[in-house]
Length: 404
Image 1 (cartoon, rainbow, N blue to C red):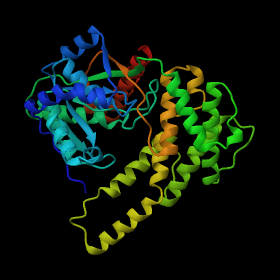
Image 2: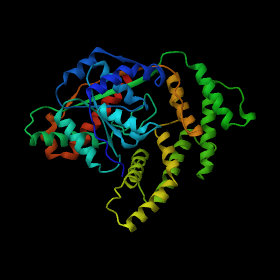
Image 3: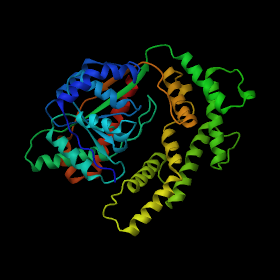
Image 4: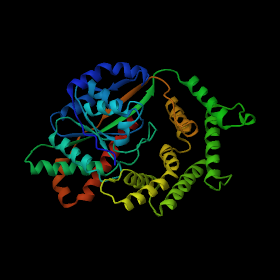
């Protein structure tokens, strides 16, 4: 069981991190800048001093840095809920974890009843000292213009916080903010795109297949080659005349069924729900508390972990391609869409994608939702109220992203 990483907010440490962020930004983020309109700032400022949850879309792995830059821009520290494995990532995991905690981040083991994380969320929200940032999608879509379905647990935690506030006789509203983030490159990226396509072609296409075609056909040809290789690996029969989207969705289904068969489960849910469920099952076993287990229980636990190792690559592959569809680039052949798809292809072929160039992160906030105004309805219709507000939040974030 990975130990819980509580928030340890330290204003002095936050000032130091703010001071060195330009250096981090230059070398790690390639010099990212923010585009925030006055209306967004006014809306965020309007809830200052009240319990507030900010729920952005999760289009890129750099979103947490974007939110930290936003907090610096408005001189308002945030709390952040982050996946537990992020705290130990990299060569300097210990220092990374300490800095994250000093800046207000705390851990959650996704897919489990992480009581420490849930309790901390309720405390942070009911206290209302700083806004709390939780990415509603849970996973990264890797697509600027795509907002996946939001997890229902985010809004549920907010209502639990209101329960706590009522018990503590705290008479304040609790706001949920929809926030849209979209990135665009600030320089000509077409040479970078062509170089990346050439590198992929050299690694997956035979020399006779590297004929000169226009840029989009090169991207599509690479994608088809990767999908065909995966189809052979997963014994998925491809109909030559079938549309590429059918191949993509069929392959996702084949990989899902493969993993579900190993786990001995069946599901009629949609692909996204099933992927989330699989990740939850894996996380629940990987991060189980073994301190109170008997020797035999630990033996069974280790056997389960060995079984899970067989499909870790399958699960990573599903998450990498979770939102991809044919036609995403053709619909709007922008440098951003090209590089989003290239990033995922590089991750599949090389094990990781590369940061390509300086960007602007545009941030737009919608009208905050006052959950206290929905509390009486929630008390009598809990599931329906959580579902309705989550859908409203998700829809508004999708509209904000589309409007940038």
